[in-house]
Amino acid sequence: MKKFFVIGHPVAHSLSPVIHQAFAAQFDMQISYETRDFEPGNFIDCMARLRREENPVGVNVTVPFKEDAFAYCDEVTDRARAARAVNTILFDGTRAIGDNTDGVGFVRDVIGRCGVPLQGARVLVCGAGGAARGVVAALKPLGCAKIAVANRTHEKAVQLGVGLGVEAVTYVDTAREGWEVIINATSASLSNEAPAIPNVTFKNAALAYDLMYARQPTPFMRLAAESGAARVEDGLGMLVEQAAEAFRIWLGVGPETAPVLARLR
Ligand code: ATR
Image (tube, rainbow, N blue to C red; front, side, top):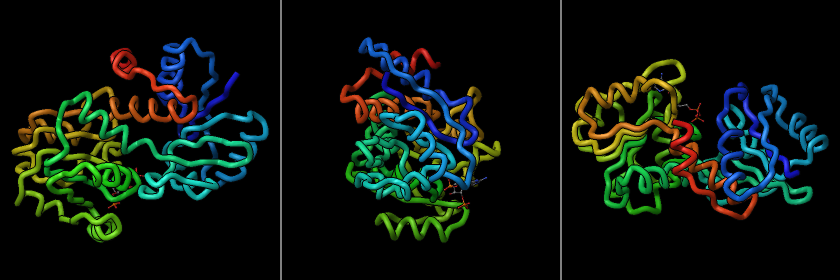
């Protein structure tokens, strides 16, 4: 049986096994998909052992190992290089080929499911880590009217902006402009906080989207809703879409995402 894993720390509560088994069932495929908790700081040894013992076809990589996975791979796709992060690895013989499906997952969820156009939109990305880089890289070719990035540590937003060719703004200055789409690509939700985005920044927002998902709306989602964003979404749809793209990379077939998302909700 073809074996797959999602690697993270912690990772026990990952939804990826359920999602990928639901995809496999659509094609009457039998696959094995398990979680693997790697000890931080020991990615290369842990991966060598996993490959030796389990011979996986592919793995997903989640927090906090996406940068380690990028450094580990023998070959990476352009979108992984832009994000400097890998969330999907395909093993081709002895070679590890790294990709990043997060950005395309985000874009498909926003355009396809939410029905919010990104072409011509003014888009604000909050955060300047790997998640923000992946989203900005995926937005770049779509013809947005403007892409700007804001971050608690402004210098990091400036660096990301220079690297990917987008504008950096402070959170305070986001209030001066109107934004159709506002994305939370920070990890603030993990500490039950929202980034310091002024209320008025959300005034014209058609969509406020948190890349994180949770049973309850995140602090960012509550802030956006209270501040007048027309629509507020968490990242569960993106999670399913990035998984579908990984499934296609590994197995060559594209699963349907809507029924899987409906089941998770
Ligand atoms: P990831 O790979 O998920 O992007 P990361 O590279 O650690 O994770 O980046 C985390 C991002 O969330 C950073 O932009 C961080 O801001 P700083 O650069 O100022 O650290 C942001 N972040 C984390 N906690 C935050 C909080 N409570 N408020 C605002 N931003 C926060």
